Structure formats: C-alpha cells, structure tokens
Amino acid sequence: MKTVLFATSEARPLIKTGGLADVSGALPAALRELGIDCRLLLPGYHAVLAALDNAQEVARFTGLPGLVDSRLLLGAMPDSGVPVYVIDAPAYYLRAGGPYHDAGGVDYTDNAERFGLLSRIAAILCTAESPLEWRPDLLHCNDWQTGLAPAWLHFAGHPVPSVMTIHNLAFQGIFPPALVARLGLPPESFQIDGVEYFGSLSFLKAGLFYADRITTVSPSYAEEIRQEPLGMGLQGLLTTRADQLTGIINGIDTADWNPAGDPHIGSAYSSRALTGKRRCKEALQTDLSLEISPLAPLFGVVSRLTSQKGLDWIIQVAPGIIDRGGQLAILGTGDKAIESALRELVAAYPGRISATIGYDEGLSHRIEAGADIFLMPSRFEPCGLNQMYSLRYGTVPIVHATGGLKDTVEDEVTGFVFHDASAHGLWLAIEQALALHADKGAWKRLMQAGMSRDFSWERSAREYLNLYEDTLAKRQA
Image (cartoon, rainbow, N blue to C red):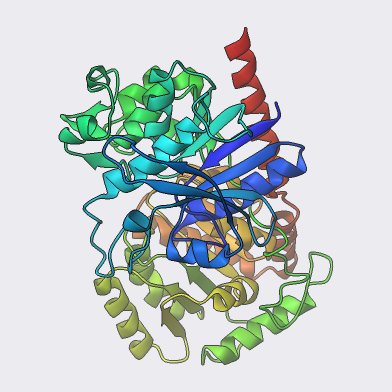
C-alpha cells in the first residue's frame, strides 16, 4: 500500500462549508504521517486558486463527453504540505457564490456537470489514460460530489479499488435521467443495480453501488443508515452491502483544539491544571455581557441553528436553565425562525442568555473553553466534532444518543447521553448534569475523564489504512 488519491469537493483550510472539509484537510495529512503518499483532488474554486497561487499545470483534459475542457494544476496544502491536484475549469468553478449554491443559496443548475468533471478526472487519474506518472493504488471518494468516479472505474475495467465515504446521507446528488447520456455514462448503468434512483440519476448511489468498500463517519451511523428514517431511501442497498460498510469516527485537529496552547483563549489550562478554565469562563461572561458568576452553570452551543441540530429543543428548555441559575451562550446561524426566537430569549433574559448570530472561529474556541456544559442534542448526527472539542476542553457534553455522538460520549463517564428524542429528554439530561455539577469533586473527575480521551486523526488514519490494505488484499486474492 503506497499511494492514495483522495477526491473531495472541499478541504480546509482552502475551502470549507462543513465537516467534509475538516476531514479532507486532516485525514490525508495523517495518512502521509503513516507513510502513505496520499494526494488530494479538488475543484479550482476562487479561494482554492488564490491560496495555491504557485500551483503549476501538469495536464489538460479535453473532449470529455458533456464536460468543459480543463487544466490540472499541482500545488501543496498551505498548512500540511499535502500535494493537491486542482481542476482549473473557470466556467464551472469560478462563481460568485459558494461551492454548491449561488449567493442566494440556490443550487447551481449545472452541478451535475461541475461534479461530474471532478468524478471523471478522479477516475481517469486511476487508469492507463492518466496523463500523470504518479498513479494511485486506491481511490478514496467522499460524498455525492465524487460518487460517479467508482462507476467510471467499473466501466473502465476496475483498474484500482475504490472506497466511498458517506459524510451525510441526506445529500445524494440527484439529477434528471437525461444526464446519464450527457455525461457519457453507458446506458446499462441506468438501472436499479447501478446509478438509477427512483427514476433519476443519483451520484451517491453510483458510489455506494460500484465502490469496493463503503465507509461512514461513525459505527452507529453505519447501523442507522441501514434502516428508515436515516437510510433516506438507500437502506436496502446499504443493507445488501453491510459486509462492505464500515464506520470510522472522524478525528479532530488536536493542535488547533488544544486548551494548553490555544491562541484564541486568554488562559491556557490542562486536565492537571484547570485554573485557566475558570479564567476562561469569566472572560467569556465578560465578552458576552453575561453576569460574572463563577458558580452559575454556563451552557455553550456552537451549531447550525436548525431543528436537525435540536435548537428548537434548546429554545424550549432555555427558561428552565435560567430558572435553575444557569446561563446560556449560543453561536451559530441558520433558520430565520430559530434566529428570531433566540433574539427574543436574549431580550427576555438579559445578562443570562447570549446569542451571537453568525460564525466566529475565535468565539467558538472561547465558548468551548469557557462553558461548563455543552449542548448538542442533534436529532441525527453522522459524526459530530463539537462534542469531541468539548471533551478535550473539559466542557461536559450533553448529547442525544445518535450517530457519532453516542459513539464518543460515555453516559455519566465523560458526559450525559439521552435517548428520548424530545425537549423533555434533553431537560432530564440537563437536570442530571446540574445535580452532578453541584458536586465539585465528581464534576472534576467527569471533566478529566473526557480530557483523557484520544480523538486524534492518527487513530482514525490507522483505521483507514487498515481498511485500505484489506481492500487491496481482497482485490489481489
């Protein structure tokens, strides 16, 4: 096992809209630390080209069916030095909006072609048609945007094995059936044992059907997506492929998220020296115009403000938190109705509730450091990162028993896990946490247990490496 091509539609720090970017920015670097020549393949958005201004052209692609001509550039990730191939196709990727939507939040009408090009080039780089001397032993695809690559590899004679990772099954890349011919896929691919999904073309289903192995971002989510409602119509296929489906917990950047050396917080601390955390709490209360109260349990939330993330439940329990002497600090953006409800709570409880609408990287670190308790009551959560940040910062998480949340938080050992998916279930867990918070010794032990857990990318990368090697071994057997 020597070389891996990691195809993705976003990667931190070049371009980020969600957790996929965190994985794509960190996992290839961790794999290289284990001796694997892992290289990224990424679309050439404005932000990517600006950050890789010294990237050099290494190939050109012309005449691909239904797709524009493009150049392939080679640069290096600015933080890790991981080699990154960039598809320079201005007609597809130099847009005023984001990677997937225009400035108004509407999907680009040519997303099938935009990410069809990403998938097609990913596959070509794994075949004898590749213009590069460097060849991967394995192709690792991520989410629907790269889902057609395993299909093209299949119809090219399956030159190398592929792995398809699901970061969120809710996003599937579904397009009209006419796109099958337009993108140059063979007609026989459009069937139930192929890319067809309820009469449409599904990029994600293509990847799930044709890839050698499927992974997702937690063991529990791997089980949940094999049944309704989280199977999203693909539970039958995923059940059929259960032997090839593996859940691997994402890691976190333990250098960036480190209370002993975090530049975003005013006072460093560790599990053995927690005094700095008390200072961080006072600083957070001051910054957010909350009452300065070292004894008040301070609850933190950093999240998209949506019902999927359980923000409606948080709004329902907020008055109870205040009645019990607590405080609430929220950071995020999302549904306008939820944003409005949070503003009303701030007005009703001045000095007790703070809601910052938007996103601020520094503030997210200060909330993790300054809060006593972190609320993450997602209705579903493939993996989640903030609960792991919280554990590392000694901020005890309260989570719903779903996906990666229940795989990373141990009830009454490192945090609190509730099973009743409702505001009432969340409130019962909050009451349980408040009761223990009053016992300083027990609370300190809970904090330190969470801070001792290993959520580094090295651990996750070793699991991926084992999966790669097993995939190759079965292919060669």
